[in-house]
Length: 118
Image (cartoon, rainbow, N blue to C red; front, side, top):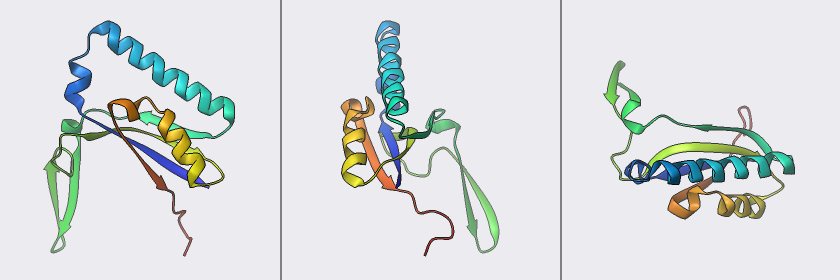
């Protein structure tokens, strides 16, 4: 079953790190990505641009409304994701716990509901 691991963190935390700490953080994500790949469970992953680059679209009374920035005003923002294919929720949670993002933010584990499924 596919699960999306959504990485939420405070973008100010990354900006406060030294270049050496940022390099170390990127190496941790590279190692995690490699482990997912070696286990054969990785289906996709991407880092997202900062929340202030987002555009939120709503349809209100048939008219398109655009809002600059992320949908929710929160300290932690969605910073990236991993799409994995594992047997069950327990396996997905185990992988989420290994994600570097779990140590400095939160990793939301969400089952994928395939298009066309009831």
